Amino acid sequence: MTFAIVAANADQVIQVSDRRLTGNASGTIVTDASGKAGHLLCDDASLLYCFTGLATIGTHSTSKWLMDAFAGSAKQNPLWRELIEIFAETAGEYFETIPTIAALPASDRRLTVMLSGYESNGFIVNALISNFQDFDNFIDYAEALETFTVHAWKSETVASANPTLIQAIGAFRALTEKDEVELRQLLERRAPAEAIRQKASSIAQLISDRHRSAGTVGKRLNTARLDSSSPMFPCSGYISDIVEEELSLIEQVDGRSYGLGLQIGAMQITAGSPLVFPKVHRNAPCPCGSGKKFRFFHRT
Image 1: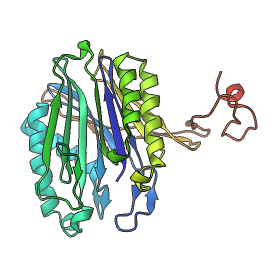
Image 2 (image 1 turned 135 degrees about the vertical axis):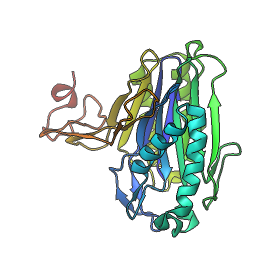
Image 3 (image 1 turned 90 degrees about the vertical axis):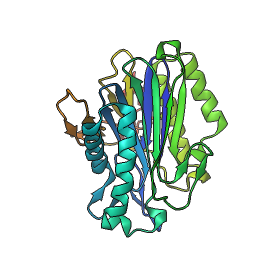
């Protein structure tokens, strides 16, 4: 399944998505290192995106397919609202015609894609495209429907007036009212971007341990942020519950009619020493194994 959450206000749009991939039938963990997030540029918007549901089967990779499908939809219409309608229709046709996907049980063909960002005129927007999640009635269907439906939202006021958005996909039922209230308070008082990113990431990692996530949500997370002052250039981040020497980034799709049409797959930066450390109390032993307190060795 996975879990992803987006939080937005006047200053930034922040997206957090976990990287766990579980087996369809068994529910066993296949990997905790499957990227499911990216950035899409349209003629009239800059959007972060992520997905939950079917990630891979045979030669099909949803991450790679999304890049191609977004780029193809943008060629037909590079405006975000029209683009997602074209994408939804394309997705329905693709899921019916690709043999490896069509042969799957309907319960294993479920997919939801979320896009969130800023319009060029300054409004916050969010779109949910799904063949199994009803976001009007908050219902998850056990089996995929034949078509993908679009649920689109646009702020009533421009971002500078500080409208707020919180939206989650995947194991969203594991998100509590308390989680949402605390995150909303940060958005409303326009807390620093890092405070909001850490809070959203903390919620995702807490959900990993909750019964309602059923073990489908991991604690290694991709994060991404759009700054309202320069929304064309996303800031990619990574949070993990273990020490890692690899820093995983999000994908990039330029769907602008006047752009270069670039598609950049998920990249990893690898080093000979740890790049990522789990969040640790400043007086706790550093997870790198040095034996020193975290504040003395990797934090001031």
